[in-house]
Image (cartoon, rainbow, N blue to C red):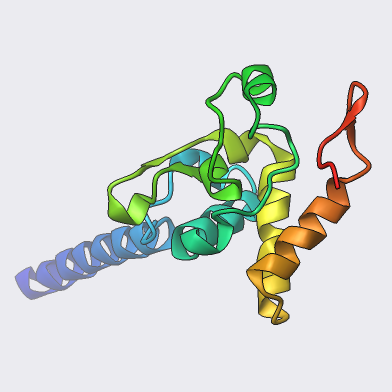
Length: 150
């Protein structure tokens, strides 16, 4: 009878260990993304791209206006001087920078990062992508001014 008890105890312990292992694996965050990056799958993908391709986003224009003092004030954030990269982080998080939540609540920012990702995968250069983003927002107006003047 005692032998059977050890088997049942072993089965229960093994099951609990397996459950916790699977649970931790399913909810792992190996990229160490911030919690707000998990709001939507697209946001997570954009934050992941920003982390692994930071330099690809530096200098690409952001269409939401956060690159100007007026736009930053309207968003309640700082001026994003480095373009799309600043929408995701303050400095490169791979080199000691900090995450920024701006892109998690701004559809233009994370959608433009994913658009840039798509264009890079199609073989476009950074200058071509910058031009396409500027063209995308050339007709967008804040009061009487276009976002990008040509």
